[in-house]
Image (cartoon, rainbow, N blue to C red; front, side):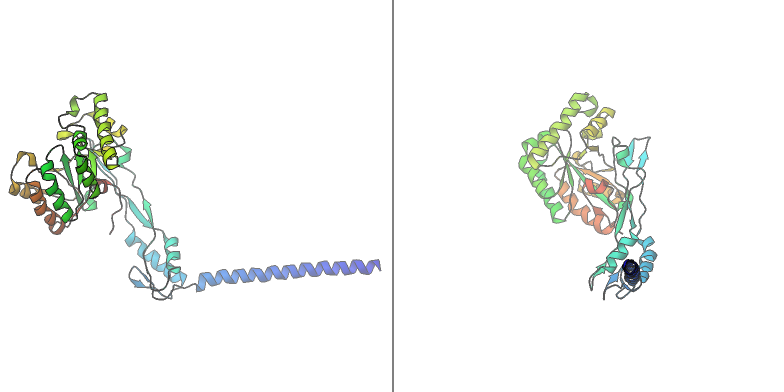
Amino acid sequence: MKRNILKTGTIIKTATVIISLLLIIYLGNKIYSMVLYEVLYERVAPNITYRGLEVGGYKREEISKIVKHLAPRDNINPVNAKIDWKNKRIIPEINGREVAVEETINKVLNAESAENCEPVFIEISPQIKWNDYPTLPASQGNPEKNSVSFMINVAWGEEHLRDVKKVLDKNGVKATFFVTGKWAKTNPERIKNIHKAEHELANHGYSDAEVMTELDWNSTVESLSKTNQVIKNVAGVKPKYFSPHKGEFKEATLEAVYRESMKTVLWSLDTVDWMKPGIEKMERKIKENVNEGDIILMHPTEDIAELLSRIIPYIKEEKGLNIEPIQKHLSPEIINK
Protein backbone atom coordinates (compact mmCIF):
# COMPACT_ATOMS: atom_id res chain seq x y z
CA MET A 1 0.00 0.00 0.00
CA LYS A 2 2.70 2.41 1.03
CA ARG A 3 4.72 1.46 -2.02
CA ASN A 4 1.74 2.15 -4.31
CA ILE A 5 1.25 5.59 -2.75
CA LEU A 6 4.91 6.47 -3.28
CA LYS A 7 4.74 5.21 -6.83
CA THR A 8 1.64 7.27 -7.52
CA GLY A 9 3.32 10.39 -6.05
CA THR A 10 6.34 9.88 -8.26
CA ILE A 11 4.14 9.56 -11.33
CA ILE A 12 2.30 12.78 -10.43
CA LYS A 13 5.54 14.67 -9.88
CA THR A 14 6.97 13.35 -13.14
CA ALA A 15 3.80 14.27 -15.00
CA THR A 16 3.85 17.76 -13.46
CA VAL A 17 7.43 18.26 -14.56
CA ILE A 18 6.66 17.03 -18.08
CA ILE A 19 3.57 19.26 -18.36
CA SER A 20 5.55 22.21 -17.07
CA LEU A 21 8.31 21.58 -19.61
CA LEU A 22 5.79 21.24 -22.41
CA LEU A 23 4.10 24.47 -21.30
CA ILE A 24 7.43 26.29 -21.22
CA ILE A 25 8.27 24.98 -24.69
CA TYR A 26 4.84 25.98 -25.98
CA LEU A 27 4.97 29.47 -24.52
CA GLY A 28 8.55 29.90 -25.64
CA ASN A 29 7.62 28.99 -29.18
CA LYS A 30 4.62 31.29 -28.97
CA ILE A 31 6.71 34.23 -27.81
CA TYR A 32 9.38 33.45 -30.38
CA SER A 33 6.74 33.31 -33.09
CA MET A 34 5.31 36.64 -31.97
CA VAL A 35 8.74 38.29 -31.98
CA LEU A 36 9.53 36.70 -35.33
CA TYR A 37 6.24 38.01 -36.71
CA GLU A 38 6.95 41.51 -35.42
CA VAL A 39 10.38 41.50 -37.00
CA LEU A 40 9.53 39.79 -40.29
CA TYR A 41 5.91 40.71 -40.94
CA GLU A 42 5.36 44.08 -39.22
CA ARG A 43 4.35 46.46 -41.98
CA VAL A 44 3.95 50.20 -42.56
CA ALA A 45 0.35 51.42 -42.73
CA PRO A 46 -1.13 52.23 -46.18
CA ASN A 47 -0.35 55.53 -47.95
CA ILE A 48 2.58 56.44 -45.71
CA THR A 49 5.39 58.49 -47.23
CA TYR A 50 8.90 58.96 -45.94
CA ARG A 51 11.06 61.71 -47.43
CA GLY A 52 8.74 61.79 -50.45
CA LEU A 53 8.83 58.02 -50.99
CA GLU A 54 5.73 55.81 -50.82
CA VAL A 55 6.47 53.21 -48.16
CA GLY A 56 3.00 51.92 -47.34
CA GLY A 57 3.02 48.14 -46.81
CA TYR A 58 6.80 47.96 -46.41
CA LYS A 59 8.22 45.50 -43.87
CA ARG A 60 10.53 46.60 -41.06
CA GLU A 61 13.55 45.26 -42.93
CA GLU A 62 12.62 47.24 -46.06
CA ILE A 63 11.96 50.55 -44.28
CA SER A 64 15.17 50.05 -42.30
CA LYS A 65 17.18 49.92 -45.53
CA ILE A 66 15.51 53.10 -46.81
CA VAL A 67 16.08 55.08 -43.60
CA LYS A 68 19.73 54.02 -43.42
CA HIS A 69 20.26 54.80 -47.11
CA LEU A 70 18.78 58.30 -46.86
CA ALA A 71 20.29 59.19 -43.47
CA PRO A 72 23.56 60.65 -44.83
CA ARG A 73 21.55 63.15 -46.90
CA ASP A 74 19.76 64.41 -43.81
CA ASN A 75 22.78 64.50 -41.50
CA ILE A 76 24.40 67.92 -41.00
CA ASN A 77 27.89 68.29 -39.58
CA PRO A 78 28.29 70.81 -36.74
CA VAL A 79 30.30 73.96 -37.43
CA ASN A 80 32.87 75.07 -34.86
CA ALA A 81 32.99 78.63 -33.58
CA LYS A 82 35.80 80.55 -35.28
CA ILE A 83 38.11 82.68 -33.16
CA ASP A 84 40.09 85.66 -34.40
CA TRP A 85 42.67 85.96 -31.63
CA LYS A 86 44.36 88.96 -33.24
CA ASN A 87 41.23 91.12 -33.10
CA LYS A 88 39.69 89.21 -30.19
CA ARG A 89 36.44 88.37 -31.95
CA ILE A 90 34.42 85.20 -32.34
CA ILE A 91 32.02 83.88 -34.96
CA PRO A 92 29.51 81.63 -33.17
CA GLU A 93 29.12 77.93 -33.87
CA ILE A 94 26.25 76.01 -35.45
CA ASN A 95 24.98 72.69 -34.12
CA GLY A 96 24.73 69.63 -36.33
CA ARG A 97 22.27 66.77 -36.44
CA GLU A 98 22.13 63.04 -37.15
CA VAL A 99 19.20 60.81 -38.00
CA ALA A 100 18.23 58.59 -35.07
CA VAL A 101 17.80 55.48 -37.22
CA GLU A 102 15.92 53.12 -34.89
CA GLU A 103 13.63 55.87 -33.59
CA THR A 104 12.86 56.90 -37.15
CA ILE A 105 12.09 53.31 -38.23
CA ASN A 106 9.70 52.89 -35.29
CA LYS A 107 8.07 56.23 -36.07
CA VAL A 108 7.35 55.14 -39.65
CA LEU A 109 6.06 51.72 -38.56
CA ASN A 110 3.75 53.29 -35.97
CA ALA A 111 2.50 56.04 -38.27
CA GLU A 112 -1.20 56.20 -39.05
CA SER A 113 -2.53 55.85 -42.57
CA ALA A 114 -1.79 58.66 -45.07
CA GLU A 115 0.82 60.29 -42.84
CA ASN A 116 3.98 61.97 -44.15
CA CYS A 117 6.87 60.97 -41.89
CA GLU A 118 10.02 62.99 -41.23
CA PRO A 119 13.19 61.65 -39.59
CA VAL A 120 13.84 61.80 -35.86
CA PHE A 121 17.03 63.78 -35.26
CA ILE A 122 19.70 63.86 -32.58
CA GLU A 123 21.35 67.27 -32.11
CA ILE A 124 25.16 67.27 -32.30
CA SER A 125 27.24 69.95 -30.58
CA PRO A 126 30.46 71.22 -32.18
CA GLN A 127 33.76 70.96 -30.36
CA ILE A 128 34.38 74.74 -30.16
CA LYS A 129 31.54 76.91 -28.84
CA TRP A 130 31.00 80.57 -27.95
CA ASN A 131 30.20 79.50 -24.41
CA ASP A 132 33.78 78.23 -24.14
CA TYR A 133 34.98 81.83 -24.66
CA PRO A 134 31.99 83.85 -23.36
CA THR A 135 33.83 87.16 -22.97
CA LEU A 136 34.83 87.36 -26.62
CA PRO A 137 32.59 89.74 -28.62
CA ALA A 138 30.82 88.64 -31.79
CA SER A 139 30.58 91.15 -34.62
CA GLN A 140 28.85 88.81 -37.05
CA GLY A 141 26.91 85.59 -37.20
CA ASN A 142 28.08 82.38 -38.80
CA PRO A 143 27.83 82.89 -42.59
CA GLU A 144 26.59 79.32 -43.05
CA LYS A 145 23.29 80.30 -41.41
CA ASN A 146 22.42 82.44 -44.44
CA SER A 147 21.04 85.31 -42.36
CA VAL A 148 21.74 88.89 -41.31
CA SER A 149 20.55 90.96 -38.36
CA PHE A 150 19.54 94.59 -37.79
CA MET A 151 21.07 96.20 -34.69
CA ILE A 152 19.17 99.38 -33.83
CA ASN A 153 20.87 101.39 -31.07
CA VAL A 154 18.48 103.69 -29.25
CA ALA A 155 19.42 106.53 -26.88
CA TRP A 156 17.47 109.20 -28.77
CA GLY A 157 15.40 109.55 -31.96
CA GLU A 158 12.08 108.45 -30.51
CA GLU A 159 10.32 110.76 -32.99
CA HIS A 160 11.46 108.45 -35.82
CA LEU A 161 11.00 105.17 -33.99
CA ARG A 162 7.35 104.73 -34.95
CA ASP A 163 8.12 104.90 -38.68
CA VAL A 164 11.09 102.53 -38.30
CA LYS A 165 8.99 99.99 -36.44
CA LYS A 166 6.15 100.35 -38.97
CA VAL A 167 8.43 99.38 -41.88
CA LEU A 168 9.86 96.44 -39.94
CA ASP A 169 6.43 95.15 -38.99
CA LYS A 170 5.05 95.62 -42.52
CA ASN A 171 7.86 93.48 -43.90
CA GLY A 172 7.66 90.84 -41.17
CA VAL A 173 11.17 91.60 -39.94
CA LYS A 174 12.24 91.28 -36.31
CA ALA A 175 15.12 93.51 -35.21
CA THR A 176 17.11 93.90 -32.01
CA PHE A 177 16.84 97.24 -30.23
CA PHE A 178 19.86 97.99 -28.04
CA VAL A 179 18.47 100.66 -25.70
CA THR A 180 20.11 102.72 -22.97
CA GLY A 181 18.68 102.38 -19.49
CA LYS A 182 18.09 106.12 -19.27
CA TRP A 183 16.07 106.15 -22.50
CA ALA A 184 14.10 103.05 -21.46
CA LYS A 185 13.25 104.65 -18.13
CA THR A 186 11.80 107.77 -19.79
CA ASN A 187 10.08 105.86 -22.62
CA PRO A 188 8.40 102.86 -20.98
CA GLU A 189 5.47 102.74 -23.43
CA ARG A 190 7.82 102.63 -26.40
CA ILE A 191 9.74 99.79 -24.75
CA LYS A 192 6.48 97.92 -24.22
CA ASN A 193 5.48 98.44 -27.85
CA ILE A 194 8.83 97.16 -29.12
CA HIS A 195 8.50 94.06 -26.95
CA LYS A 196 4.83 93.55 -27.84
CA ALA A 197 5.75 93.52 -31.54
CA GLU A 198 8.17 90.65 -30.72
CA HIS A 199 11.32 92.60 -31.44
CA GLU A 200 14.28 91.85 -29.20
CA LEU A 201 15.45 94.19 -26.44
CA ALA A 202 19.14 94.42 -25.55
CA ASN A 203 21.48 96.47 -23.35
CA HIS A 204 23.29 99.60 -24.63
CA GLY A 205 24.58 100.82 -21.27
CA TYR A 206 22.74 103.28 -19.06
CA SER A 207 23.67 106.39 -21.06
CA ASP A 208 25.33 107.05 -24.40
CA ALA A 209 27.38 109.71 -22.60
CA GLU A 210 29.27 106.91 -20.89
CA VAL A 211 32.65 105.88 -22.25
CA MET A 212 33.15 102.27 -21.26
CA THR A 213 36.92 102.48 -21.52
CA GLU A 214 36.93 105.21 -18.85
CA LEU A 215 34.56 103.59 -16.36
CA ASP A 216 35.90 101.73 -13.35
CA TRP A 217 34.62 98.27 -12.45
CA ASN A 218 31.82 99.37 -10.13
CA SER A 219 30.56 102.01 -12.56
CA THR A 220 30.54 99.49 -15.40
CA VAL A 221 28.60 96.92 -13.39
CA GLU A 222 26.15 99.60 -12.26
CA SER A 223 25.54 100.77 -15.83
CA LEU A 224 24.85 97.25 -17.06
CA SER A 225 22.73 96.09 -14.12
CA LYS A 226 20.65 99.30 -13.94
CA THR A 227 19.83 99.04 -17.63
CA ASN A 228 18.86 95.38 -17.32
CA GLN A 229 16.65 96.15 -14.36
CA VAL A 230 14.84 99.00 -16.11
CA ILE A 231 14.12 96.84 -19.16
CA LYS A 232 12.98 93.93 -17.01
CA ASN A 233 10.71 96.17 -14.93
CA VAL A 234 9.06 97.59 -18.03
CA ALA A 235 8.98 94.64 -20.46
CA GLY A 236 9.46 91.64 -18.16
CA VAL A 237 12.54 90.38 -20.00
CA LYS A 238 16.22 90.45 -19.11
CA PRO A 239 18.57 91.31 -22.00
CA LYS A 240 20.98 88.63 -23.17
CA TYR A 241 23.24 90.92 -25.19
CA PHE A 242 25.16 94.15 -24.70
CA SER A 243 26.67 96.53 -27.23
CA PRO A 244 28.89 99.40 -26.06
CA HIS A 245 28.47 102.97 -27.29
CA LYS A 246 30.76 103.55 -30.31
CA GLY A 247 31.98 99.98 -29.92
CA GLU A 248 34.43 101.08 -27.21
CA PHE A 249 35.29 98.67 -24.41
CA LYS A 250 38.15 97.18 -22.42
CA GLU A 251 38.79 93.74 -20.91
CA ALA A 252 37.02 94.69 -17.69
CA THR A 253 33.94 95.66 -19.72
CA LEU A 254 33.76 92.21 -21.31
CA GLU A 255 34.20 90.51 -17.94
CA ALA A 256 31.45 92.63 -16.38
CA VAL A 257 29.11 91.81 -19.26
CA TYR A 258 29.78 88.10 -18.75
CA ARG A 259 29.12 88.36 -15.01
CA GLU A 260 25.77 90.00 -15.81
CA SER A 261 24.95 86.84 -17.81
CA MET A 262 25.18 88.62 -21.16
CA LYS A 263 27.40 88.50 -24.22
CA THR A 264 28.96 91.40 -26.07
CA VAL A 265 27.83 92.07 -29.63
CA LEU A 266 29.35 94.49 -32.13
CA TRP A 267 28.61 94.95 -35.86
CA SER A 268 30.13 94.21 -39.26
CA LEU A 269 28.32 96.79 -41.42
CA ASP A 270 27.57 100.35 -40.29
CA THR A 271 25.06 102.69 -41.96
CA VAL A 272 26.76 105.64 -40.18
CA ASP A 273 23.27 107.18 -40.32
CA TRP A 274 24.01 109.62 -37.50
CA MET A 275 26.37 111.46 -39.88
CA LYS A 276 23.43 111.99 -42.29
CA PRO A 277 25.14 110.66 -45.45
CA GLY A 278 21.79 110.49 -47.31
CA ILE A 279 19.53 107.57 -48.20
CA GLU A 280 21.14 106.81 -51.57
CA LYS A 281 24.64 106.56 -50.14
CA MET A 282 23.54 104.31 -47.27
CA GLU A 283 21.49 102.16 -49.63
CA ARG A 284 24.41 101.73 -52.00
CA LYS A 285 26.74 100.84 -49.12
CA ILE A 286 24.43 98.15 -47.79
CA LYS A 287 23.60 96.62 -51.18
CA GLU A 288 27.24 96.51 -52.27
CA ASN A 289 28.57 95.02 -49.04
CA VAL A 290 25.92 92.96 -47.27
CA ASN A 291 26.75 89.26 -46.92
CA GLU A 292 25.77 86.19 -44.94
CA GLY A 293 26.36 86.69 -41.23
CA ASP A 294 26.38 90.49 -41.20
CA ILE A 295 25.11 92.56 -38.29
CA ILE A 296 23.96 95.91 -39.68
CA LEU A 297 24.11 98.89 -37.31
CA MET A 298 21.62 101.75 -37.45
CA HIS A 299 19.79 104.25 -35.24
CA PRO A 300 16.28 105.74 -35.31
CA THR A 301 17.32 108.64 -37.57
CA GLU A 302 15.25 110.54 -40.11
CA ASP A 303 16.24 108.41 -43.12
CA ILE A 304 16.28 104.93 -41.61
CA ALA A 305 12.60 104.06 -42.20
CA GLU A 306 12.98 104.81 -45.91
CA LEU A 307 16.32 102.99 -46.03
CA LEU A 308 14.76 99.91 -44.49
CA SER A 309 11.92 99.93 -47.03
CA ARG A 310 14.58 99.75 -49.78
CA ILE A 311 17.10 97.30 -48.36
CA ILE A 312 14.75 94.74 -46.80
CA PRO A 313 13.36 93.51 -50.16
CA TYR A 314 16.87 93.51 -51.61
CA ILE A 315 18.34 91.47 -48.75
CA LYS A 316 15.47 88.98 -48.81
CA GLU A 317 14.81 88.64 -52.53
CA GLU A 318 18.02 89.58 -54.33
CA LYS A 319 20.50 88.19 -51.80
CA GLY A 320 18.24 85.39 -50.59
CA LEU A 321 19.07 86.07 -46.92
CA ASN A 322 16.89 85.79 -43.83
CA ILE A 323 16.71 88.78 -41.49
CA GLU A 324 16.71 87.58 -37.87
CA PRO A 325 16.97 89.18 -34.42
CA ILE A 326 20.38 88.89 -32.77
CA GLN A 327 19.52 85.95 -30.55
CA LYS A 328 18.44 83.74 -33.45
CA HIS A 329 21.17 85.08 -35.73
CA LEU A 330 23.95 84.22 -33.25
CA SER A 331 22.45 81.09 -31.71
CA PRO A 332 23.79 77.61 -32.49
CA GLU A 333 20.36 76.73 -33.82
CA ILE A 334 20.50 73.99 -36.43
CA ILE A 335 20.20 75.06 -40.06
CA ASN A 336 17.20 73.57 -41.82
CA LYS A 337 18.09 72.25 -45.25
